[in-house]
Amino acid sequence: MSSVTLSATPKGNGFQATVTFANGVSISSAEAFPTKSEAISAAALKLLGMPERLEGMDAPDETE
Image 1 (cartoon, rainbow, N blue to C red):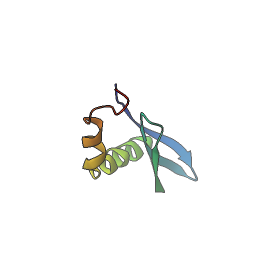
Image 2: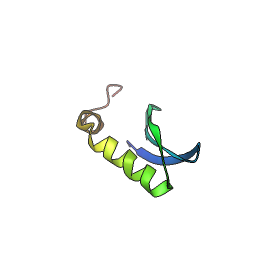
Image 3: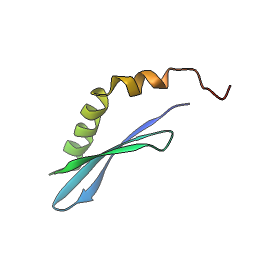
Image 4: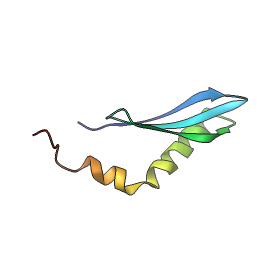
């Protein structure tokens, strides 16, 4: 089962957005956002901007 986690971690005076994929790859924002909800929203928008990553989740598992 594939999963994607959107998270917000403290950074400076705000929060950093992070997208983490099931295979351990994570992508974090360079900027900090004032609230956790803004950081998680930014992570979701970043994910939507990478349709190839989402399509890759539907590809057959190469280990099968």
